[in-house]
Image (cartoon, one colour):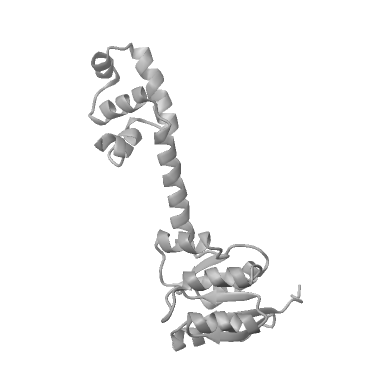
Length: 216
């Protein structure tokens, strides 16, 4: 099926070789035109004021102002513009900052030509293209936050039992330590496993050694 919409792309990258490499990725694409390029943040913002653009491929590290500042300004000037970050940084803080400030996608500079082309098309269609490494970090971050949220919902008794399990105590030993029945211990342990998202004592103990509650 032939694409009828011409996608106008601007590349914002300070390194000439990288910029040329990105442009070459689109040379044979009949549906994508590189309509402009900029080597600094200020040039990019000025260019966007005078050029009709659909997608911007934006580097985060620029010689004058950082890419996040450019992104913020582009969002003010052109709310409908699709901005895809193209960066060497895969740390969560960079990814989160870009997405929180309105980036439509985040790609690493190791992305191959075919993936880069497809990412631009996907961004234009309303999707959020992400490099696999970036997507993995985001999923891990979300899962981590869910784990923290679950730990925050633990009752004082559950936290106490969790600490004792991490010290190697059996259910019977927990009973003696806390002066409660074995059925009560089993009840709390079951709730503890469910809230922590673990299947057994090994999982709970492993998580305890990475928890602020265990260190407290």
